[in-house]
Length: 466
Image (cartoon, rainbow, N blue to C red; front, side, top):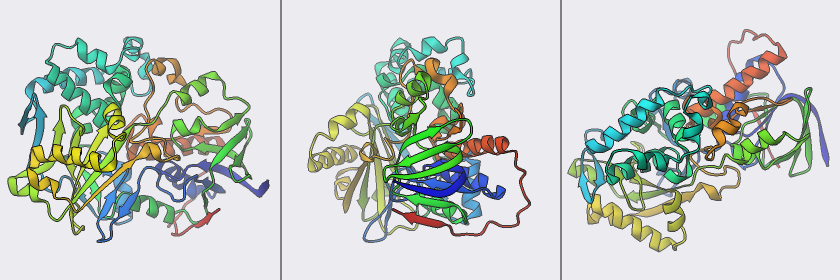
C-alpha cells in the first residue's frame, strides 16, 4: 500500500463536470486540491467518438440550454464555437401518433401536458418532499397518474414516453409522479425541458461538449488529477477523510467532495458507516437506461422534404430522433434514443437485427433513403462501469419522501455533488456544474478563507495516469 505523503485541503472524487467545476471554484483560494478519476479520461458522461473522416459523434451528453448560464459562460470564456439546434429549424418536426404521421404535436396530448405542467409549478425545488401531496405522488408511478387522467390512450403514451423516456430515460412504471414533477420543474417546465429553440437543447458545441471539459482542465494549473484511480474505501470523521484506491494508494484531505453519480457512490465502502438513511438514498438512485444510436449519411437528405430531422414516436423502438449534423462535419447524422424496457428488449437482439429494426422505423418518416447509411454507431452507458447509466439517475418510487432530506447534506468531512443533486437543471451539465460549485462553496465557508485578488488563471495542469 502506497501512502501519498501530500496532505490535501480538498480531495474530489470524479473528473466530470461536477468535479471540475468544484475544483475551479476552489482554485482562487490557493488550496491544495486533488482530483481522483476512476476512468482513463476526464469529462464524465461526455464523450466524443471521431470517425475516420473526421465526423464527431457525441456518445454522451451533448446539449447546452438557452438558460444554462454557467455552461454558456465556459463556452464564451474558452472561445468555443457553438451553434443552435436543429441546424434547419424551419423544417417540420414529425410525430407518429395513433397510427399516423403528423407534423404538429397533438392537441389532446398538449392538454395532458398542460395538466402536468401546472402541477410542476407547485413544487418547491429545495424540498419537494414537503408538498402536501408529496407522499401520494411519491408512492404512485407516473404511469398510474397518466392512467387516471381523462385523455386518450394515445395521448397518455405520447406524453409518458416523452417525459419518462426522453427526459429521465426510464419507463413510466419505473419513476414516481413526484420524481417526474421535480425533474420537469427543475428544468423550467415541459416546454423548456423538451425544446431546442430557447430550450434545454438550444445549443451544441462544435467539436463536442467534451471540449468544454478539456478546457476546464486547462484552467487547473497546480491541481493534481490522477486518472485510472477508482476509490474503494473512505475513512472519515469531522476533521478529515482518508481515501484508499483500487490501486492501493492512500490519500488524505481535510474535506472530500464525492462528485460522481449516487449509484457509483453507493459502491464505495465508508468507515464509519454512513447510516441507513444515507445508504438508503445512495442505493435507491439508479442511473438512466438509454441506448443512443447514430446513423451516418452522405448528406442531410431529409431537409429536401422540408423536414427538420426531429421525430417523436408514440410507440415503437425509437422514442425520439434528432438531426445531429454539425456545421463542421463532412457527413450528416441522425441520432435516436431507445429507453427502458424497449431498450432492454432491443439489445437482446444481434447488432444487424437491431440496426435493421431501427432503420425500418426511420424509413417510415424519411423514406427508403433513410436505410442507405454509411455507418451505424450505438452506445449503452449502462455498460460503462464508471458512469452507471445515462442521462442521469432518478430516485426509486417512495424514496423522495423517505430520503429527500439527506440529499446534498454533508456528513463529517464528506460533501456530495452531481447533476442528480442539483435543484436547477437537474440531469444536465448545467446541473452538474451548479452542484459542484455549491459543494465547493460549502467547503470554502467551513475553511473560512478569503478570496484573493487574481488577474488570470494560467492554463495547463499536472495529469498522471496509473
